Length: 265
Image (cartoon, rainbow, N blue to C red; front, side, top):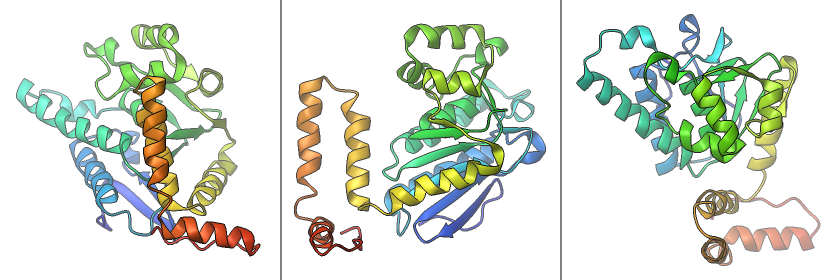
């Protein structure tokens, strides 16, 4: 399904259906370099092809100065135009695969998320963060612009006018502001961040996995359609659940007053 050992990521399975992915370059504030981009792409592609027993993912970082400081500018220093574009294609594939991953991904943001780090948070299904975290899309301050979904995902979360202010000023904002504006679902003290993230992941993993994945697709793609088309798409997704063994098990369990045992079939 996915490699068990990565040099820039740490994978943990605290329980059978929950995968914890930690960005693991603490010496450089978990900055995104080519290797990390390749490994994240490989991980998300593997989970897309075959999630196996994984029903929910928590994306966090090994404690450092930041959850993710964005792209590794030291690695990029002196890159040719061609090398920069080749690297960015890796990043593009990684972010897009994360956004379309059938398995839900919850970001547990335990530090600052700048530039590509914030874009990674925005590419997840939802996010919790510690009060001390700061967020920013800083790209225009160094002569580029957000190129991993920032100009698309941020306005969908906070609205067009606020997104323009954030992106064009390049100024950081607080976790509380991120929560009020719709970037975060919760602001959580550091000592309980992972506990709450895992509790939510556990709740997701307890539900029928095919149903969860279809519901996620319906929300994600439906928002890109007009309402009538989105409603039609929802029914198509719904109808795929009717013949499943998990649907039959869910109804039996309800009537037998017991916890359902879903198998993803």
